Length: 81
Image: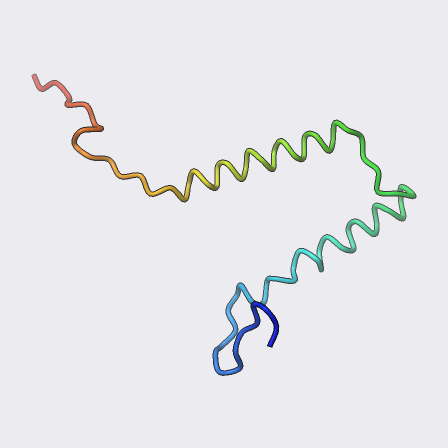
């Protein structure tokens, strides 16, 4: 059994089925781009933008996974009239 494989006595989950999806989708896409353009070369602006947006998205996902709880000390008391 390979790394990350599901044991035979356990049902497969959506994660197990979807793991090869990026290769099945992006493989033909990049092959089509390579055939159409003659290469897989993109301008530095495209690569820079791709890396910047990917970094920002990963930062946002990491922030969403933080377990931050509001306590009485972190919430300012509202004035009552």
